[in-house]
Length: 444
Image 1 (cartoon, one colour):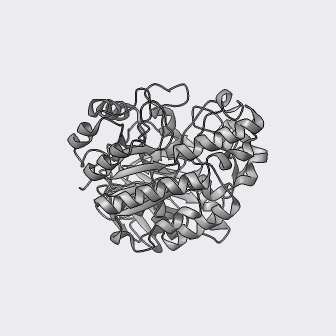
Image 2 (image 1 turned 180 degrees about the vertical axis):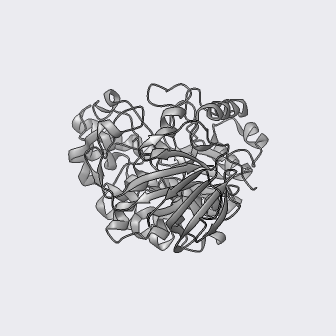
Image 3 (image 1 turned 90 degrees about the vertical axis):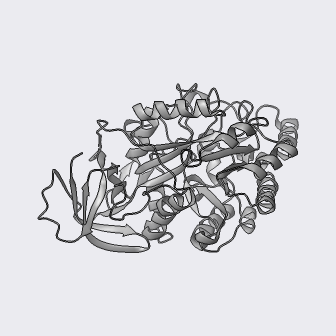
């Protein structure tokens, strides 16, 4: 691989911001220092004071392959990811067929090895009856197991108490859960159908996928994790109420951790009037009070990671009525720059963004030698120009679906370069797909 020198960078890493140079050799960070101009180098990138951060590790994406490739695939969505500063991702199992066996898991790894521009790992999905597959997992070769404790596709909803208890008791690796109580949601759906028929207003989405549905399911998951000593990671928190269930202790002292997603920190229920189904997702985006509480929880360490829950659907699908429009947003390309908006507003520091998008995911999932700017670690880096605004439009969207909930928004910051395992896959608005990402390994 070519050697790379990034000079004159504002390096954000492990709670500090320092000016310096980074020398990359054989895909890894070989030296960190200043004045490294005496090194023989194939590629020189003069950062000229721009920010160099560890690339985002997105532990929650849906890239739609196999079976749903009219919405997206590993090729297209990893292109969107690297354009947005994501260098590694963990992809969810609700594809067609669902990833609920080790054989299907390995088939996805084979696809990614050929086509993914970012580093990759996959979850094994939990069903009511595949506990034997979960027991067979090698924890060093899989991101974790994913359980839907709420509505899902196919046979991946796990709502039988006996099955839920067995998974919590016997999971041999990290258990990631989607928490929404399906009984409460069905009751709410029936009530709104009786009022509006099929034409439920989009503004009522957070009333149907309610805060109560989230809280009751999350409380059960946390209680079971305490009971069985499960390593639990609760996905996409969306409510103020759920925050009381999580600790603000240092991450090293936690066995139960929490994620929120970029869209819950950016949008609120007031945006349904303008955005409609284009911000329909599960759990629902809720009130501005919930959004502000989530932002505070990120800063206070009750929320440990920020992900995307990237889930593309076609424009035609999203233009349907409330019950017929699928839930999910394409967010990989725009999540990191949306978090940088909070930096520009004086809410998040750069150090905090690096912690929640790179350092903490690497620690929680025990990813080998990634997530930090350290000598000897893989060179997964993003170079950001904090003062280069741009507007989201159809012409610059990389996801296959071709639309974004941020359409027309003017971001303050631009992703200038993304380096994945030492390869500059995104630079100055162009993708170099000559080198593919690598399979993530886990130090468990």
